[in-house]
Length: 261
Image (cartoon, rainbow, N blue to C red; front, side, top):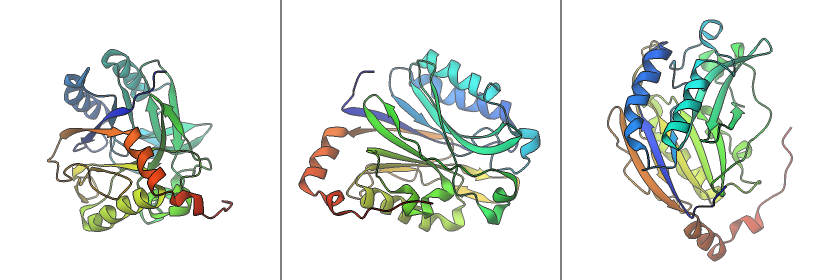
């Protein structure tokens, strides 16, 4: 796979139709089809095909289900990678699973580790136990889902990540926390961080304001974080710029060793 110094990333900040997978896939496809040739990676919010519903027995899909088939077709047709989380059923268990699908048909995934107990997620889903590092166009990409961002030990960059992705359904009432934690994860790990959040109101009456953004290793927002509803914006991030900063300020050399149990 060809290595690219400059990676073009598109944040898809979208409103989600509550528990309506077919409509959500239609809406997303209409938004991203014009991006052919203009981006390398499109990032979607958490549970982008249903919203953050806990009606998992009705809405979770198998790994050969409609949504993954749709992602595979679209990535192939548009020659880009597509990622975000959906509810997945496998071996009589349910997962909030981040999917990363590339144009060559490869599907990589990460299961959400930290399930949101306040929202009953931990009662219904199985937590993941493995972190994932995805190599795409020469970039090390570490995927995480929403609530994971509150747990810096789990997110600690020990495997060579250049970019961390946080796909979320993060309510507007806690948006200041979202903004702060995105910056913290970028600074402490010396990586780019892409946070993609939904907009609109869900079936539980929670309102989402988006605030999707990309932050560099210095903790600086590399573009605006006030995208509108159903908005796409593409940023270019540089691997050489990241490498230069790490050489100039090599804080990772002084990091602590630890074991996660």
